[in-house]
Image (cartoon, rainbow, N blue to C red):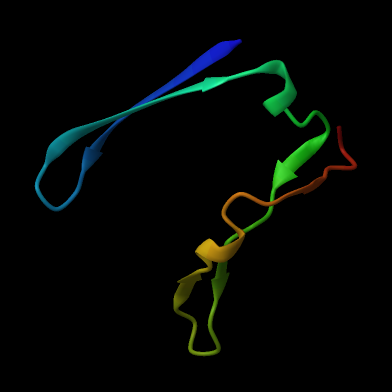
Length: 62
């Protein structure tokens, strides 16, 4: 088991945000990467598609 801890600054209220997650060895997907959830619209604005936030695909570079 391992623990991932993230700390960041929330932009609107300028408050510190903390997150902690425990992972088991079965949670790790070796040779995979997260899918890209950021794209550009036809009018060149950034778009984020959170429906694919947890999806991974095999990474041939690994």
